[in-house]
Every structure is written in structure tokens, then in C-alpha cells.
Length: 344
Image (cartoon, rainbow, N blue to C red; front, side, top):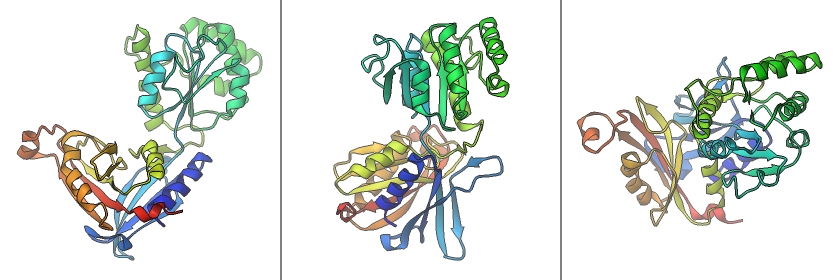
């Protein structure tokens, strides 16, 4: 299966909420593309429900086997468009969350206020939540302007699938009284007890930006470390927007993928970028010297119909003299993405 076919099929699967893995097989440290193949298969999580990229040697087929899991992109639903929502939307978008902001006031729910959001919805909170159809890959932050709206959000949320994360802002007393009121109404006590409140990590945050950082720290913790519901934790460093961009290009490029790391490295396994003949780069494997060390290989491989496994060493005196501060090593797979894959 070609690069485009395999990732196209994988994107369809994860957009429908089904995690998959891409298995890439290639022989030796370099060769032509006839010795490299990809297949899409079911994910194989650890007993803890964690998905990790792996680079192994397939004895039976006498080839390298790199497996990278793909899971649906995490959606952050921010309920309330006030002063905290603005920096939170910006930070979350930078951390690759697909951000949706909901508020019932047109002056707060508009794209000019939230340029980093994928969607901005001006609607009642209850109706918007019903229309959004919550999944186990969603993260929900409740930062509305009042007790009554918080209650409306929670009443609507308990009728939906449990998200990966629910957090609600508010004083301890206010939140305690609200949760008890909803329990007295008969709402699911276990769901209510799973709400992260006080919201965010305890870092002494005061300003809206600081509070947003504390919330983001907790979101990342739940994204990378804490599993909930039927969601699998994915520890791949793959950026789905890079794959989506790769599907749209109409010219030959070299694809660079981090397939192994040891020690401290700027990006993890799965990180990806592609480079065109003019040296334009989409994505990143860490920037600086880590990318500089492989760009020449990538430019040389465009149009050759070949692949190459490249070692990047960021340890010892040489790395220090080049300004590398990570101190680890990376293996990256550099491959030609030939122009003929774009023929329809």
C-alpha cells in the first residue's frame, strides 16, 4: 500500500473514532521503495491501555518493522467564552487540540475572538452539547459565567458518552454545593465525582493566562498519562495535521519520520516532517541541528525512488559544539514520495 493510500485509509478510520496502527516494513538501512511497504492494522495496546510506537526486526520477513499508532485527534470543548477561554484556546491549539468554543452571547462566541478554534458555536450550552455528540476522545472545560450555566452544562453532559476529561472552574464551596444539588436531582454520582475541580494543576495561578496554563498542564496529563473510559492513551509524537497536509500536496517531497529515540531528544518517535525540492519544510522533528543533520539527505533522496535510515547523534563533544542540548540519539526514516502517487 502506498504512503498516500495507507494514510488516507488510516485517517478515515480515526475520523470515525477507530484507532489504528501503520506498520512500515523496510529492508536494511537503505534501498528502493519496492523494499518498503505499509499496512493499516488494529492497534495493539499494552495491558495498561497505552499505545507506543515500536521499531523491531521481523525475523520471519527479514526486515525492519516500524509500528506507529494513530488515534482520533483530541477535541477540546470550551464551554464559556470569557477571559480565560481566550488564552486557553490559543494554548490548546498549539498543543494540537481541535478546539471548539461555545457561548450563548454573540459578542463572546465569534471567530475574531478565537482565531485558533476549529469551531465557535453561539448557542445555548445544553443544545450545543447535544449537537456536539461527545466521544471518549473529547476534553471538556466548563468555564461559564455562572452557577446556572454550569448546571446546564453538567445536565447535558451526563446524558452523553463520558469524555476523556471534564474540568470545571469555581470556588470549592460553590462547586461542592452545585455537585450536591445535581446529585439530589438524580444525576449519575460517579460521573459527577470524576469532574476535575478545582480545575487545573495547583501552580498558584492568578491571571487568566496563568490559569489557562494550569488547565493546559492538567489536559496534557490526561492526554498522555491518565486513561479514562474506552480511550487508548497514545504516546506517539505524530502530528495528524502533517499527515493531512501530506495528503494535499501535488509535488514530490521527501518524508522524514522519527522511528527510534534513545536518551533525551527534541521530539519522540512518530514525529514527522516533509521537505520539497526548494527546501520548504512542513512539520518538525525537533528543529535546529536535529533537522539540519537530515535535510541534505532528504533533498538528495527526492526523485530517486529510494529510502534511507539516518542516525542523528546529539551526544558528546560534537553535539555540544553544534549547540545541541538534548543529548540523545534518533533514527529517522527518510523516503522519497514520488510524484506518480498523485495521479488519480
